[in-house]
Image (cartoon, rainbow, N blue to C red; front, side, top):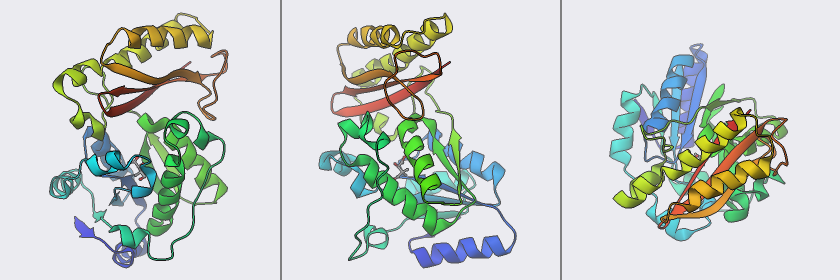
Length: 280
Ligand code: PAF
């Protein structure tokens, strides 16, 4: 695996691999790798000839400076995990490589970016959309891999790549979970042992929603109330939202008849976790 920190060197490596006839994969990340990231990398490895991982803790998508400061960073550990997962090129740009002096463009995906995560974290999706548009343009990959845990982010990215005619295919990858059901997240390491135990309540509430849907409940309010009831029984959980929404637009729905997504965000101490589950 080669590690590069400039766009020129990255493009040199990608260009040579393309000339040799390889398909190119990119896995955009902010580091602090866990099994979820490794699953994206392994899937990319299976499907493409050259695997690029970008590792950039993007300051513009953190609306809370404390969250940015505390975001876990361990380059040496990440590099060794990426190497073991079969990554060919690790791109670790400095902030000034991505946002040079004079940088003055923002990509905003309207509507969807204002709901749920967007409402709780103003500016977050403009930061994500801008950096992802840049990373997709910088790498010029055939396929880009994103986890479904960040479902809303995935919809924002699908929309921007369609609207901006970015030729990279966006490949969604199912959420990877701990054995007790907690969705893997780089933020999980910041939970205290008690908070870690309590956080499993999110996947329990989603499992309840799915059980109700599978048993024939179609009323979205009934399903949302059931999730709330499970969450409020956990004293360490402070719920931000527990809702049933349209999977594409993230707007709340009355009925799950045409497909729906159950989505939860909750704080455990200062750590904010999200998770979701499709309801048939
Ligand atoms: O999901 C993430 O890790 C980030 O939001 C992404 C897509 C790498 C953009 O910074």
